[in-house]
Structure formats: structure tokens, C-alpha cells
Image (cartoon, rainbow, N blue to C red; front, side, top):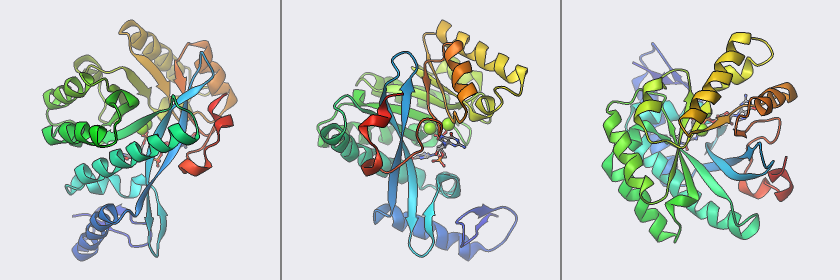
Length: 274
Ligand code: C2E
Ligand code: MG
Ligand code: MG
């Protein structure tokens, strides 16, 4: 049984403090309902144009008495204990509100890339909820990139495929996150009608240090191009990583080298150009 550490909010394996775990989950559920979650945004740049018109939304939990918690401390818990649907829905609705704000205050062409757990995608209600939210805010699904995160394995890939097909009919674009590691096999690339693939940070972090990693990235970019899929490199931190990715014609990059994730109010128009 897993439990939480009250200081970090992290789930710890192998302990038996069930009440602590239950209290953490209760707090997380309350946090979603009471708007204790917030979103930070990080621009994704097109290497050809040098511009960013896609911002990735990243969830944060401003936990009273604890401080700002990062997703690694609560997303897995939410996935394991049935809260992820509620959380992903809250995030999408906040993205709708923020997109309207960005278009009024920053740039009219902005789109938001929203992380969505594959578990949420497997629920038919989830796609219906996203359609309803877009109607409520008079937005179109084509204003969003839906980034499928596969931290736990996909139970039924046909359901995720149906999710993509349903929302694809409304203009949504899809992205496979963290591609090439963990629970993100080639099968997903084969089965799902996706538009973009995010090459996992493990490979990007090894540029300049491992020829094997560079070879994998180069071939992933070529494979994706062959399939008509765009490639995104995440966690770009160094100038030489940027140079390598430009040279091999990766389509988009994102990372601390260009801009760290920040609240919507802190994003400036100037940072949307490389
Ligand atoms: P991800 O979607 O792969 O997001 C990229 C992570 O890398 C983010 O961590 C971001 O802050 C971090 N990052 C960006 N640039 C750099 C860099 O240059 N160097 C380094 N070291 N890190 C960088 P974060 O915000 O902690 O999010 C972690 C993961 O949590 C995300 O990985 C995503 O899988 C998940 N997540 C975040 N928000 C949501 C959400 O709203 N819903 C769901 N289901 N999952 C989410
Ligand atoms: Mg992501
Ligand atoms: Mg990722």
C-alpha cells in the first residue's frame, strides 16, 4: 500500500499509513473543487518560423500550509485513485478561460496544449465533456492540442483511438507525450491518429553525450516525418541541443533554454519569438 508524505505530498511505496493517504486524496479532491490548482504555461516554438503559438498548460497545486506542489507529487495519485478525470476536466475548463485571456491580452493566434491522462481519454464521457466546455466558452476544439500522457499503460487503445477520432472530427489536434520511454510504445504511434509526437526528455538530455541517443532522435524525427507527424523536443536546456535539433529538422522545441513555465500573467509577448 502507498501513502503520502505530508511535507512533499509525494506518494511513498511500502508504508502502511492508510489514513495519511486517504487524507491526501481527500485534500486533492477538495483542491480540485475549491480551485487550489492553477496552471503554468510554457511556450512551444516552431523551429522553422522561430515563433510560438502553442503554450503547454502544466498543473500546479497551491496547497495551503505546504506551498506550490508539482504534478509529480499528485498526478500519479490522482490516476491511481480515480481523481484524474475530475482533475483533467478542471484543467481543460481553466485552459478555456485562460485561452480567452491570452487571446485578449497576448496574441490572437495562441493555442493551448493540454496534458490529458490516457485514463481520462478512455472514458467516453470525457470527450463529451470537452465538447460541452468548448460550447460553453464559445471556443473550438481546434483551439487546442490534446497531449496524451501515458504514465500508466493504456488499458484499451481502441477507446483512446475513439476519443481521438471523435474529437478529431471537431478539429482537435493530438500529441503523444514522452514518446520512446515508459508506457509509450511504438504501437501507440501505429494505432492512434496523432499529429505530433514529443520525444522524451531522456533522449534530449543525452544530446552531445551519447551518439546512440542522437541516432535514436534522428531516426525518430525521420520516422515521424515519413508518417506525416510533427516532432516536438521537450526539456531543451542547452544551446548545443537546440543546434542539433535544428540541424536534424525537428519541428518544435520547448524548454528552460527558451522559457520556463510561468503563470499566464507573467508570460510576455516578447518571449513568444526565439
Ligand atoms: P510533461 O507533459 O512531459 O511536461 C514537461 C515537464 O518538463 C514539465 O514538468 C515542465 O515543467 C518540465 N520542463 C519543461 N522544460 C524543462 C527543461 O528545460 N528542463 C527540465 N528539467 N524540465 C523542464 P511538470 O510541470 O512538473 O509536469 C510533469 C508532468 O506532469 C508532465 O510532463 C505531465 O505528464 C504531467 N502533467 C502536468 N500537468 C498535467 C495535467 O494538467 N494533467 C495531466 N494528466 N498531467 C499533467
Ligand atoms: Mg506534456
Ligand atoms: Mg513530456
